[in-house]
Length: 343
Image 1: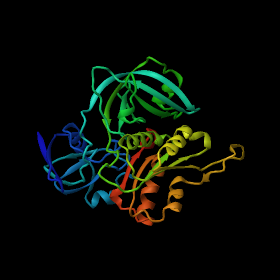
Image 2: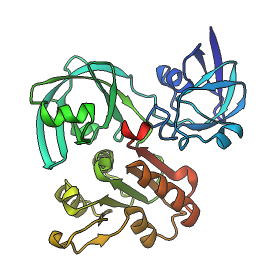
Image 3: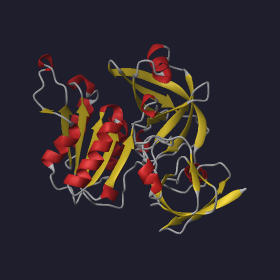
Image 4: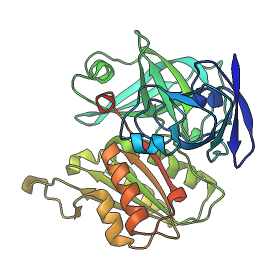
């Protein structure tokens, strides 16, 4: 049994089979909808149900509250249609552009730019043409079928020889996957992956100046965006704000400084929230999104690309729109929800 979902304002339609979430059906058919975690935790896929009936699977209150649900909002990642539906959702050109592939990868190299961050390069299989947009992510498929999502930290033009994607993995003690990465994973290991996923990537049809906001390993997809901007020869002004607890957590600080030195339109502002005397830190301190607000009280003409811990992304979205006049639809985010955040 299938139902038809019609999107407004685009008028696009697609079929959803019984018990399938709307988002899953859209991804399967190459239709670009906004989304992040696919897991009911981040709220990026929130849309409005104009006609029809859906049932929601398990999701977080902060992603969709009971009040929002009562007012007609849905999470497409966990809403399964019970009738034909009319849904108001902005389509994301390019989100469904490349085929989603399941593939093996081989661990090519592992580095530790910080004690709790692994920078891993995973070689792509030669027989599959894996394509993605800078900012998108892959899911690792673990032995028990569980999945973990990590953003590509290199733009597609920077895969190297042999082609490999770069991933930045923070150690979450007790985390099933990251404990393995930090204790047992070694070069030449084979991993299973699926992707690309996500609607977080550069809106290349805009010439607005950009704020690139990263917290922690949220720097990974932002790094890929910067490489993409450089490859395009873009002249759009961009300021990278990278927030971390201690200076050592800015694990690729030299890379960011070099990029800003090389690209005339890019500035780099590192922000440390918990500097200690022994750090000898003389740069900006405090919360990274507040540093942006201090520098840009009026964001009405900007686009913001934000990536990192959910609390940082949510605070930035709320405060930039409410206090800095940022248009709501010019805030693009990838919220790094860990397994711990989902419970």
